[in-house]
Image (cartoon, rainbow, N blue to C red; front, side, top):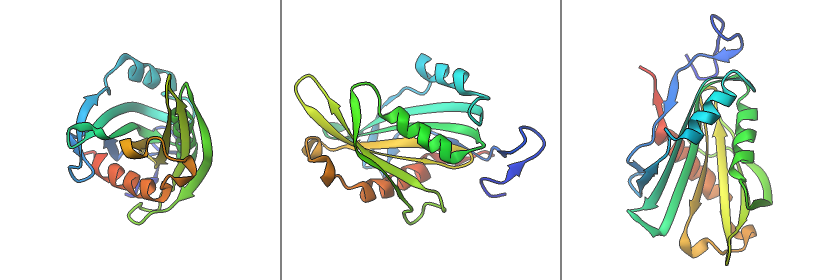
Length: 191
């Protein structure tokens, strides 16, 4: 049964649970190595408890991974925050993930744009650019999010050489393609 097929038995209008998300040791074909898996943190459990059954989510679980480029975070960092469960309204999940990505101390400077990269299985990937103001520097953070009936997440790739680039120069199309790859490597069928 395809993702998005409705399950009538429990949770009318919710898709059947067919996929979860995992935080693998490596992502993007081995280009990034896991530095920290915060999936079981108190913060993620709080999000799960607060959101389960609300806003069109059921059976919600969260994952959070931070990766460095070949073990060297001075070359680049990849951060992935994801959720899985059963989502009645994937578009709303994707919008909520984008709002969550713009955390404290950051602001949207390039508005959200939708992409449909090859290999995305028909899902929409939404991307925007944030600027985060630190004590001494502004950091440009391009962010993309996806959501389907079972999984959703946001991805940001911070490459040291591009961290201070003009936000208008961020390659959102490239990050959307990378997001689809991250999704395909993290998304696991339930057996």
